[in-house]
Image (cartoon, rainbow, N blue to C red; front, side, top):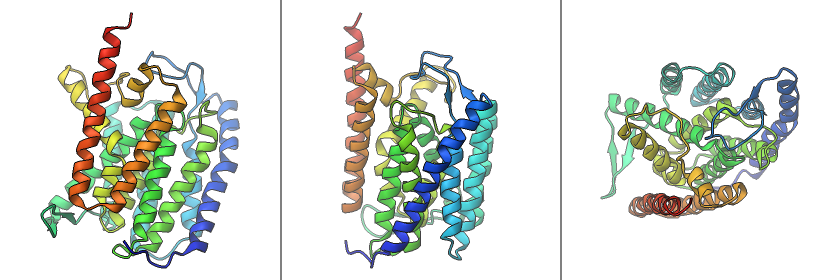
Length: 340
C-alpha cells in the first residue's frame, strides 16, 4: 500500500519526548515507591519473581504518554476521549496496585472507564466483510462491540504483564504497527500515527528498566493504560480492529483460552493460575528472555502480515495463531507427563 507524506519531525519529536519523560520519571517513581514501601511481595507459586518489587511503573508511563499528548495536542474531539478514558483506566489500575481491588469492583471500574471514549464518538461503526465491502453496525451494536473490544484488549495486556518486559515490549510493537498503518494512504491519519508513536516510545522507555532482570513492574496502572491506548487507537485509525486482533492474536487467544479453561474447571474467570502461554513456555525449560523474545518475534511477524494482507489472509493467520497455542499446550502437557 502507498504511504502518505510522513511527518518525520513530529513523529520523531513526539517519540523522543514520550520516551525521554518515561526514562527520566521511572527512577524517581522507583525511588519514591521504595522509600514508601509500596512493594509487590510474591505470595504464590504462580509469581515468577521471587523478591519484593515496585509495581508502580505505570505512573511513569502515564506521565510520558499524557504529557506528550498535551505537548503535541491538536484540536480533535476524539483526543479528549483518549485523555479522559486513559486517565480513568490508569487511576483504576493504580487503585488496584495499591489496594488490590475485588475483581467485581475492578470489572465495574473497567466497564465505566470504557464508556468514556464512546461518549466522545470513538466507536466501531463498521466491520470488514470477508466477502467484500463493509458491514455497517447499528448504533446500539456498535457501542456494545466497542465496550467489549476495549475490555478485551485492556485485560489481554494486563494478562501479559507476567514476565519482565513482556507487556511493555508487545505494547510497543502493537503501537508501532498501528502508527505505520495510520500512514497508509487508505487510512491517512497522520495525527493518529503521532499518538501511536507516543505510546510506542513510552513503552520502549519503560522497557529500559523492565527488561529482565526488571528493576520494577508497570503494574495494573500501566497495563490498563497501554491496553486502553492500543484498543482506542485501533478504532480511531480507520476502524482497523482486525489489524490489532492479529497483532495481539497470540495473547488474545491465550486470554480467551484462560477464561474458558477456568470456567470449565468450575473456577471464576478472573482466578489466578500459572497456565498462561508465557508460563507454559517457561515450563519447557526456556529462560525469561528467550520466552519474551519469542513472543516479540511472533507479535512482530503477525503485525507485518496484518499490514500487508487482506481480510481472508488475516483470518487464516489468526487460525494459525490458535494452532500455535494449541501445539504449545499439547507439548507442555506431554513434557509434564514425563517429567518427575
